[in-house]
Amino acid sequence: GLSHLCAGDFKSAIEKFKAALKASIDPLLIQTSTLFLGYAYLANAQYQEAISVSEEVMRFSEKYGFELCGTFALAFRGYALAATGDLDGGFKLVGRAEKTYLETGARYFYAGIQLFYGQLSLQITEGGGPKSFSFMVKNIRSLIKLVPGAARKGEEHFNKAIEIFGEIGAKGSLAQAHLGLGSLYRAKGRKEKARESLLKAIEIFEEIQADVFLKQAKEALASLG
Image (cartoon, rainbow, N blue to C red):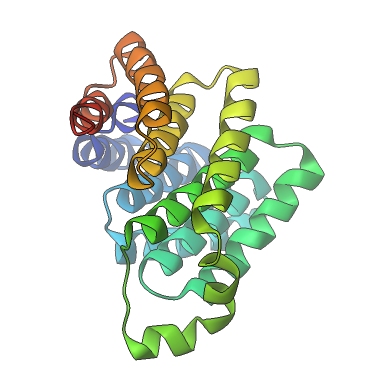
């Protein structure tokens, strides 16, 4: 399941994690598989499923003190809430996870949150996301923080993620951060910077054989003309 997840083949990852759950009897393995199933749901934009899974993992964590999985579930629950329109609620949860990762020195997971912030800034820069009046009212505090200077903030978050992922050798996540940064530069019309970042992403995706992400990066590069 993890190999499919890292390659960007989220549907296959979901099926593999489901199969692992059916075959598992060890409680720790079950919760780990459940956690990654939830993350695969999130990556595949199945947000309600991700939220449901996060609740299960968080209950287990609170009962047995399995904080590593619990904090990760807290973070991706926040991602899912933000993706479904509850920015304030989602940011509150992600912020709690970010604080924990800083305090415990969990650099990979901290960098993952920077990647999330970068992707959100990219979406705002590209003009994506809901724009209804009720959404604006519900999330006014978060929007005031996010929208002004979204591209600049996104660049900072992506670069922070790139720095940490590079230092710890997390190649798949590093390439995703380069892809996000390249897409941000493309959205702002900075073609040479976009090309530079996308080429770095392509090089790593080719090395680790992440075919789905590689296709996305090549399409983004081709769009530059």
